Every structure is written in structure tokens, then in C-alpha cells.
Image 1 (cartoon, helix red, strand yellow):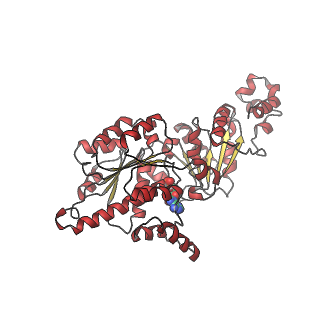
Image 2 (cartoon, helix red, strand yellow):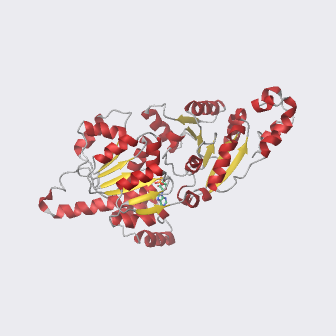
Length: 435
Ligand code: AMP
């Protein structure tokens, strides 16, 4: 999409991206995207990658991390290609061999990385391909035969293709391990190690992870040589720019509260998080019954269905997308106005990942969280992690305090029932006291 920038912004852009010593075709592509200035991870990472250094980056989705590795790799590959084509007999220019491997935990993220490469590399002659499982490998194999410079892959399908000798990693010069912590969470540790063992010793490695637990540290120590370390804190990069709010609500009223909030036209696009796959389906079904167009995306759906659902949402054919954490991982949607936590996550870092889907690259966003009685422990952990109390919205029609002064039998929570009908008012207080 062509974006017309005001003159002062173009000047600002020239200064800030020019400081990174980028070549003209990349600057042109960034201008085309309307990027005004590099994000902190780009500013810190790009020059070091261009110098040939390994990188250990602690950064999550939403910080501009994809561009932070894609842009310098495209530049280095382009320059190497030009040098090689000057040397007549190298054969480099004629034959494309895979020289960059980007490994991602999910198909969605792999597709997004490939889209970013297409975006930033639009004025360069660098070929890229994305391969992932769950779809026929026929087209992937054909594309590999035609020659590829950058391969973006998920671990399982990559190993299949290596075993069938459709892919060779012998000439890899750049290796990117994206969302390494997620890779381990999803049980890919052996696959990743097997792939690493097939890479040449001499290469430049860029390692990205939202968190750096011990296992990740060990993997990074094995893989990286004297890396530059860049840390972009979630607090500074995302959470602070997002308007967060909290709704105390009983479990059985969450769907009514959701329909109530989404009936507001100000919610242009919303990503709703559910803890379970069945829950995601149920939420989407309930919304559709309330005439709010919604679709669910999760791991039980076929790859084609997931891609179609995601495209519908990206193209604004669907206003509401309901997702589980794994399915939403890495979903990159520009201009996502709202994130709604229908269920609070058990792992507090997941809250930061989720709300980071809105408020991208400094833009403002809204994150709404529902909290029922059982989720109060998760809430406490989240507030500890982000080091602040999420502001509570009290005057909503399903507020626990409003619901329970004179509870009707059908509206009583299990918690309430355990404490007798007369405890309705007390329930409201108890709930709040524990907040
Ligand atoms: P990522 O962290 O790679 O998932 O990127 C998050 C979003 O930020 C993507 O939609 C990018 O298109 C966008 N983005 C990356 N770098 C910049 C930049 N310098 N200026 C504006 N947007 C950016």
C-alpha cells in the first residue's frame, strides 16, 4: 500500500533509516510501507547484523523484530550476490542455493515472515519460499527445484524435505531462529537440534526469543558466537501504549458481556482470546447467534481453513476473530483496534504477548480483560509481571457487584450456591475484596 508521507516525515525518515547504512532498494521499500523510523530493536540490531555479528534478541512480536532480521539479511545477500556475479567463474549468480534459513514455530508466523521478506525485498532479486506441514508438499518441492535464496520453514516439514533430499542446508550463510522459547514450548526442541546439526559451522546466527529461560540460554550458548545482545522490554515497547481495562464478571455472563461490548461500532476489529479450542468455537457461535460476525481459529482446523479465516479477518470481511494462544501466536494484523481476553491466561507472559497484538509499533490499542472468580490468581500474577494494576470498569451491566445484590436462582454462581442464597451481596464484596 502506497502511503503519502508529509515532507517533514520524509526528512525524518531519511535521517533515521539512513543512519543504518541501508541500500537504496531497501530504503525505497520501507518508504513504500510508510515506516517513519526504525523501532528500537531495528535501530540496535540492524547495524550489528550488517557488521556480520551473531545476535541474541529478547523481543516479542510487535516490536518490529521481523524487519530487524529480514532487512539486513536481504541487504547482505544482495551484496554477496553482486560481488559473486562480478567474479565470472563463481557460478553463484546462475544457481540459487538456499543461503538463509528462517525457522519459526508456527505456520502462521512462517507465512508472515515470508510476507515481510516480500514487502522489504520488493526491489531486490532475492527469491524466498515458505514451507510448512499440513498441506501437500508438491508445490513446495516444485518451488524448491526452481531455486530459492531464503527458505522460511517450520521444523517438521523442513526435516521431511531434508530427509527426502529436496532441501540441502550445506550452503547456509544466515540462520534465524524465531520465537525460540515458543519452539521449545511446542515440543520442537529435538527437531530444532536436529536441524541445527545439519547447518554448516561457519554462518551468522540471529536468535530471537520473547523470554530467555535456562533452556533457551543453553541453546543460545551452543549456537551463537560472541553475540550482540539486544533486549526490548515488553513494558516499553507495547504495554505502555495500550489502554488496558478489566471487567469482573461471572463465568456464565462472559458471553453476554462480550456481545454487549462488541455491539459498540467503535470496536472495528477485535481479536478475542479463549483458553481452549472448544471455548473458541463456542464464543464464535454465540456471537453469530447475537448477529455479530465472528470466526474461530485454532489447531483443530485444517491449514486451509485457518488461512481462510485469517485472510477474512485481515481483509476485514470478518470483524471478530476468536483464537487460542497457539493459533494466534505471531498473527500479524496491522491496525488491530481491540484485543479481548475472554479468559485470562495461566502464564502471565502470555498476557503481554496477547495484548501486544494491538498497539503495534507505537500505535495505540485497547486491551480488555474479563476476570471471573477462578481467574483472580492469574490476574494477580499478570499485574505483578506488568508492575501495575489494570484499571477496573465498574459500570457495566454484568458487573458481579450489580448481579448479586438480589440474585435469582438461575443466576447464582457455584461459588454463591456454596455460600447459600443470602450470600449474594456478600459474594459481590468477597469477589472485590479478593481483587
Ligand atoms: P513484528 O514485531 O515483526 O511482528 O512487527 C510488528 C508490526 O510492526 C508489523 O506489522 C510491521 O509491519 C510493523 N513495523 C515493523 N517495523 C516498523 C517500523 N519501523 N515502523 C512502523 N511499523 C513497523
